[in-house]
Length: 276
Image (cartoon, rainbow, N blue to C red):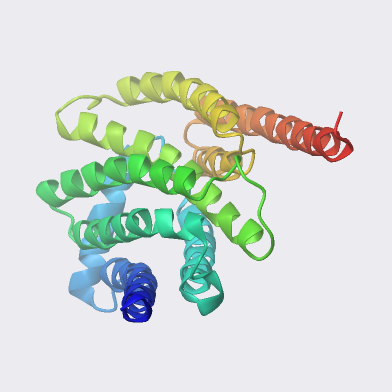
């Protein structure tokens, strides 16, 4: 009887790990096919209309930033999903805790891809709300994997850093999405209003990012926030020089903060090893 129960438990565990990997990979593939650039005139017209709306939000980084960050995050997360599905990880308690959070994040990712594939107001709002809802789910995943709390061996140690990047990027993306919702509600129609909002929001999100990275004990969380600020600086360098200069300055400050936190983490590890 005990042997039978153990076999059932092993099968359930394996099924859960495989299901999680399938949802992650499926969510990423689905998002790609929903939101990839158009290949015909109708789709291209849709892309142009959507891009015009995106550009009205001055917190939006240059398009290349999205491609670089999401490609990196997706590749790393697929690797994490595959790793947690391996037989050698069947007793990994962190991966067990992370399974529901991984599933939730990439179901929401697929939903975002669906909304983002359409440019009407309802779907723009849907994409923004979905993005905002992904942030607490990402933080839940971050905590389940015990990032910044527990030291782990490779390759888990490296794979967890992609979740750090993901969480940091969603912090920036949520700020963009909040701005989108405000704009869709009829505010910031005048260029000066959008500019003032952006100049106020940039220092706030940088300060929040610094506080959150310290609370999570995770300097890698800052990397994608830095990428977002750099992307904003590049995009606005000709049309909104004040915004570009502020975003670039804040990116440099966060680079310094990243270095400080990384150095502090190594110092603490040294102290722990020495047993002081």
